[in-house]
Amino acid sequence: MKLIPIILFHLACYTTAQEITPTDPKATALEKIFSSIGDKQFPTALDAAKKIGLHPQVLLEVEFLHNVDQRNDKAIAAMAPKFIAMSAKFNADNSEVFSLKEDWVAVAHYTQALAALEKNDKNGFKKHITEAFWLSPKQAQAFAPHIDQLRLNETMARVTLDPNRALKEQETRKEIKLGEILANRKAVVFHFWSPMSQEVQINMPDFILTSQACDDQNIGVASILVGKYPGIIQDAETLRKEDAAKATCDWLTDSEKDSLSNTLRISEIPTMVIVSPNGKILFNGNPSNSSFWNTLKKVAPDFKRPNNSEHTDTGNPQLNDRKKTDP
Image (cartoon, rainbow, N blue to C red; front, side, top):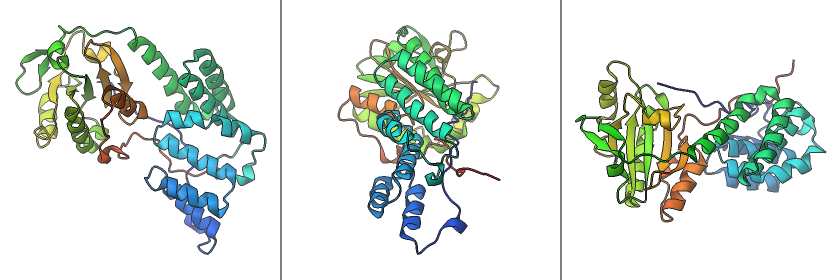
């Protein structure tokens, strides 16, 4: 079983309580906006912070952290012009996040790298992501996944799944072919999971709601158990026992040889793969990625993302440390 933790930006998040002056409106707005990162109330807090007159640099920083937390690459890419414009007048004294200008400029290149990806500009992406690495190597774990994702996408573009490939039902061990799963569906979502994954355990209620929302739009869902250790079937049955009836999906196990997880280069759990009726790969990645939901929306324009799935992913960026820890 391959489990690679998702580690993104270890940027700072917020100030300590001792640094806050309750009677200071700007300090209150600052506290509110940082505490609302990743929350539905963030846009409201951001508007309030703008009206109260928080420094534009701080507003841009916190908006960036929010988009990182939401894994909204499209929104991060759209921030590139603002970061470029602000880079010339960056002042560490005004920052709530960045200790060094190099870190700020690295993020500016990072946003440009994602903007290049949006345009399918591989050379532009390589140029800016390389510069981001050079300027802020400590953020390598934030930059590297995008390189991996680009290579994965290029590989997936060459993959067409064989409808005669066989999997087995988790409970009955009965064989079922991919063609049967894909038949008469707009698309099928393959959910690769393991009972060993804490993220899977925590987000099982979200998965159930997602499977129901997909089924409403004639998008199939197949949950594929990954792993070979003794007793994995029993562990999986125990974990899903109460939820099996609620989830509108097929519960399957991967084949032992020439596994589907290897074909699709599954390297972290959970992973969602959206497959077209003709076996082409439309998406391959973590379900917290906004591209997953955007792809479902393209497949079925009336698809609505379940509310429970908005912000419960434990693999989201960790934003628990603050800015500089200067001696």
